[in-house]
Image 1: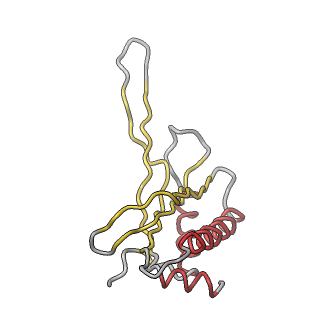
Image 2: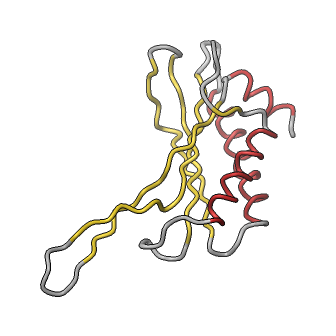
Length: 148
């Protein structure tokens, strides 16, 4: 992997967390009240990176990280089934404050399927998640918040 990306990962202490992605499905049967069912539709892989004090061009680091993440997702998609959907959701303008570590920027990788909202995530999505995690490790990105 590009040394530049590894340096960015180290400089910003980039890490990721995995959270389930749920959808609410409204079900109606004739003559009854509508009911809702929550379905595990996939996974969100959220990436976090601390903003450094000496940043002069933080957007350059963000763009390089985004491009590396897109390359990783493309590798995974080459080996995924047609029913698996992986998208990178940029949040370049979204910055939040974590009082313990400073400002953090986020990117999200959402892994879902194209089989219909009422279908739960299954083996293709779980396999894609494992492959995404492997690609993140190859970039030097660890799971869970690093210790200061």
